[in-house]
Amino acid sequence: MLSLNNILIVLSFLPLFYRSPVSSISSVLSNLYPDPEAVVQHVQSSINASVTRRRLSSPLSGDAQCLTGNPIDDCWRCAAADRQQLADCGIGFGRHATGGKGGRFYTVHSAGDNDPANPSPGTLRHAVIQSEPLWIIFQSSMIIYLNHELVFNSFKTIDGRGADIHITGYGCITLQHVSNVIIHNVRIYGCRPAPAAMVRISPAEIEKRGGSDGDGISILSSREIWIDHCSLSDCSDGLIDVTLGSTAVTISNNYFAHHDEVMLLGHSDSYSPDSAMQVTIGFNYFGEGLVQRMPRCRWGYIHVVNNDFTEWQMYAIGGSASPTINSQGNRYIAPQDPNAKEVTKRLDMNEKDWLDWNWRTEGDILVNGAFFVPSGDGASPQYTKASSIEPKSGALVEQLTINSGVLDTSRDNGGGNSRGGANPGGKSRNGGGAGDANGNGDHFGMIFGSDAVSNKSTSLWVMMVFFLLFVTI
Image (cartoon, rainbow, N blue to C red):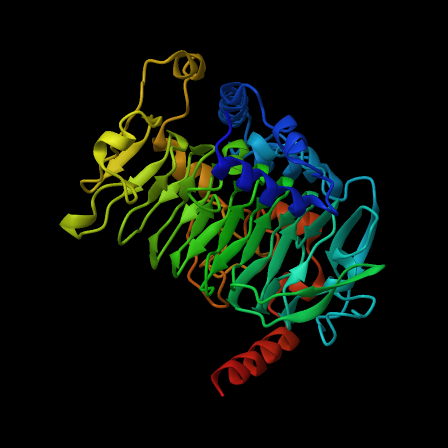
């Protein structure tokens, strides 16, 4: 019999979907993959196939420079100039996110955001609220300083390839009651709490929005969401939050830096609808200046695969409310602090309360004294199925994450990715990337490059100077 508390939770959950493609609790649960281990196996088979294809490719073949071993990047980089091929390249629980595939291209030509209730055509805000599927691209590099949270409609792709796109300011990105959104290749940083305001959320609807927390990306009551190749740092709250019944989410190839509470998955310990949450976190680079929550999980099933955890100050992966955490083929590099070597942290729980939680490590590399405390029945049938395809070892992490973050066509060092967090002027990592802006192996730049971004334009630097002056006054 349902307890009064559970009944109240269910009743509180229903209004969240009044305008949503995800129209009820039953529809959220219908999107729940009944066999999450089958999704895990699909991810591993995709990685195995891409790594093998790269090893077998000839340096003289036409595909050699687009094969990285990363199954997402190999899928679209080898597809010539078809931008919308990206929508077929997802993996994991969010792999069916279509974004704006099949819709028209919408070109953003203005960085303005003067009136959130009546956005001007040609702005990013005007693009994301439209009712139709849209593939949103950018005429040139720009810094978009938001005056309020940027609320999306369903079936949208933000595609920042070929330009250097910065999103900052108040509120930043909100995905609430939506489905099929892809956010690709943008920098998100400096997001601050937004005050209450009237904000247009569709061509026909203006909504009074309460104050937001200042997350980089907030995903609430949504499904089929894919966040890929973004660089995120230094926001007031989280960099990415996935809560309130959201599911079918993939967070991949991103670069996280300079932040305390990086990622939250699950609204609260009492919010049981988040038990339907399924999230894949793959090929991300957790970089300098991070403290905790990479992620912090409640409820749900979280697959953490082939990420590079290079820094934390408290812990890397934490949780409560009995989430399932499947950690495969990651590299965990512990800090020097002898009291912060543990990768995992069960929050506000006694050991007897979490011994049966399914937290598993397989193929992970633990460096500098790092240790992962597993729990649950490691020999259960679900884990036996998962190991029918062996995960790629953490030894391949550097290869799989070398291009994480924004794929910037401007290179500081002639190789690798300019991905020093989301901030302008961050440091870069060397090796194995898309090449330099002069065409030396720059497969990415040849496809999507433009005069505006082949080198950092004077106008962009001027915009950045004015922005820095504004925020420091």
